[in-house]
Each structure stands twice: as C-alpha cells, then as structure tokens.
Length: 220
Image (cartoon, rainbow, N blue to C red; front, side):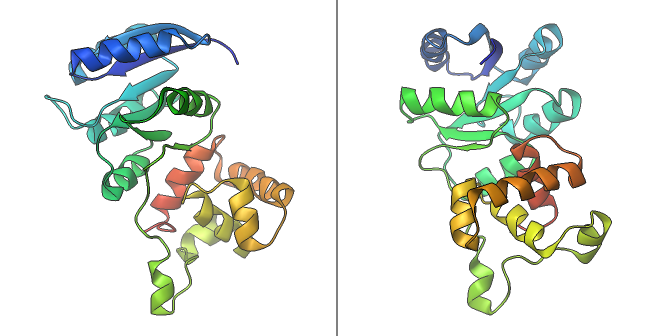
C-alpha cells in the first residue's frame, strides 16, 4: 500500500496524543496532523488535502455529522473514518448517508483500528466491531420485499432486479461472501454485479455504493 496522510479531529487532547502514537506505528502513514474543531480542520484540509480523515462526532463547535457532509462536498477524494463512542445505529445510518467510508468505536483494539484504516484508504467500507445499522429487514415482518427501490431510480440507471438486491445488501455493509451466501450465488458473481453497479452509477468505491443505497431508500 502507498503512503498516505492523516488528519485526526478530536477535542480530547490526551486521546489525540494516544492516537498519534498508534498511527505512528503504521508504516504506510506518511504524516499526521491534529485539529480540535471544525475551523482548525478546514485550515488543515486546504493546506494538506489529506488522504484520510479520522473524525469524532462530538465536537465543541460543530456536529461531526454535519462536518462530514461539508468535507465530502469540498474534498471528495478524502476518505473519512468516524472514530467515536456513539454506537447508536441512527448515528451510523446518518454518517453513511452523509458519505463516510468507515465507522469505528473508540474502544476498538489497535489491530482492528489499523485494519479498518487500511481498508478505508483502499476504497472499501469498514464497520468496526459493535457498529450496526437499524434493522433494514424489518419490512419482511410486514410481508414486504426488503429490496424495494424507487422505480425512477431503477429505470434511470437501467438496474436489473439482481443488481437492486445486491445494492441493498451492499448498503448493509455485507461482504461479497455474505451477499453470495444470502442470494445463493458465487462470490465471483457478486463481484461482477458490483463492478457493473459502479459503472452504471458512475462511482468507483464501495463506500459510494453504500451512500447510494441509502439515498435510494434501499436501506431504511
């Protein structure tokens, strides 16, 4: 993996110092900068244009969730990993709707944190241990299909029924193998459908597919 730069945003200085120590032990990390609020963050973003942003949700001057939307709008190529103590599925859902690439809890182990960072930088979505979304399959108990998408969205993007199913499951942060097991198809078939979805929806990352799954209301 190539070297990458990191900006950490957290207003707890002791935690930030501890995180810098952890990040310094990751050989691919090229530089580490720290901001304690949104104002300091944007100064660093314009100066550094980092590859990865590690962001707490609880900041003094601005909601981390709102910062995500602003960062993604102005610095779309920067990957964002939420690092927080909030495990409420509603926060997780909102974070991914706003465009984050990963979500981890602050009580995570060092090895899990490093693995998550590497996956996010590589363009994958990462859900840390203890992180979950609301029960997206609750419609099954009401006799409804869990894979219902807006007809206009499907027609505009020329999606097949299978692609809608797979996009929905991607939105749940399931791996290719988990999707394959649920739909009784091979991992390779899932990979092909995933590539077709990226092409049709003009995106180049799993995180972008997750965001689209939320926006198209495939994940509720």
